[in-house]
Amino acid sequence: IINQTPALIIAITTPVAQTFVKKAKCPVVFSLVTDPVEAGILDSITQTKPEITGTSDVFPYEEQVKLIRQIHPAAKTLGLVYDPGEAPARFALDQLTRICPQYGFELISKPATSTSEVPIAAKSLIGKAEIFFVSSDNTAIESVPALVSLCVKNKIPLYVGETGSVEKGGIATCSVSYGSFGVATGKLADRVLKGEKNIPVYVPSEYEIAVNTKAAELMGVSLPDSIIKKAKSVYTQIKEK
Image (cartoon, rainbow, N blue to C red; front, top):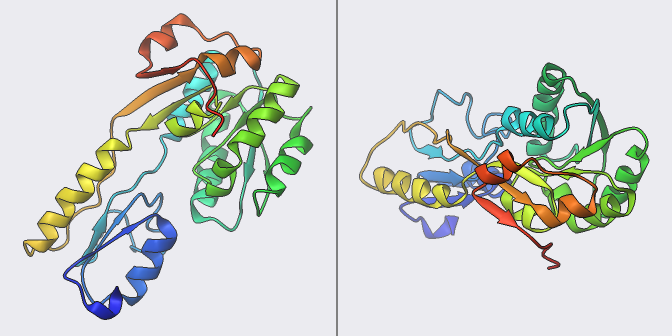
């Protein structure tokens, strides 16, 4: 693609964006990059480069922790398995380390550098963490089915960061609307192709709740009616594939 000298490159996800930003000789619009600064794409979220812009799908971690607290008012510990080799996972760890104490949670984290390591790391948290959480970590997200099985077996509540993982068995999330990113990315691309430069990064400001009542039942959690009523998506089964 780079050798074909296109007018514009749209790079989806952090690893792809990192590659094209370094090598492209044309404007780049990135999409679904959690932290473009930590990823080395931009120097600052507010200081753009003339021909680089995009969308950040940073999870609303405070809203997610707040949701967990509403469902579990007496819980004290939150467990996180994360891949230290992933920029989004490191960003999540930093954010949760800061946010969890504000809501009365002790964050207990365990590294896992591959999908095969995730269930092993999660098992080591049993008895230490009352609740498990999956952040914007591709390694952990790919392991959600294994985590769901582990949590159902041990009656440990599992919360996730995006709606797709709720459908697969996470109890609930407060998530960005991924449908909005395609629209936002398209609009940014149009502006770039029209010659506009120094365009600010799109960061969503509206979120939606999703719940899985079957997962909650199997993990021994009673979801408040008030949260179910607020949910945009309510799943009543666990998607196997």
